[in-house]
Amino acid sequence: MNRGHNGEEIFYGNKYKSRFLDFLEDASKKMKIRMFTDCIMDNHYHLVFENTNGKMSECLKRSNGRYGMYYRKASLGGKGYVFQGRFNSTLIDKDAYMLHSIVYLLRNPVRAGILRNAEDYIWS
Image 1: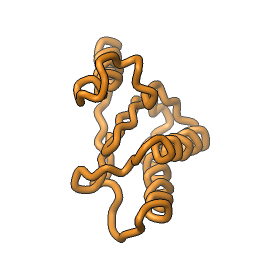
Image 2: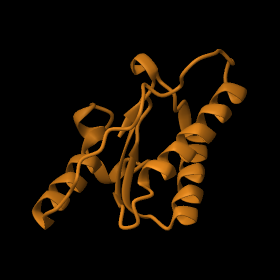
Image 3: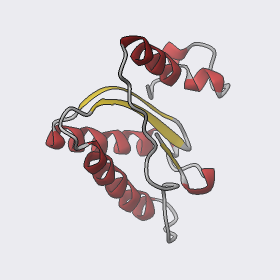
Image 4: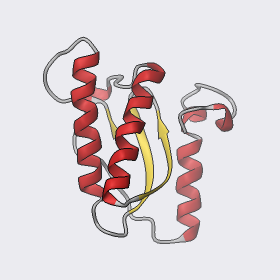
């Protein structure tokens, strides 16, 4: 997961979220990393990847970097960091923890009070 610098909104509406997913899907295909699920919120994202080849860090560096350049050009400009820092990650080594992680990720919009049913959120 990663969030906007200082918790700021960095995914304004569908256009920005869609563009980030494009960058993420492109990088994950090039790095041959399988993405199980994702959730893009206004100020952060959560992902569940299978990092079998050890290139997850490179994949996220590429995705976040491309999005940062896009964000600065498409929004009001500005300088400095778009993301708060390096992504946070946790090793999922058990099936039960995998299930817990996916449910947690998909319920993120419900916990944030955006909607009542997780299946109604189009960005996960």
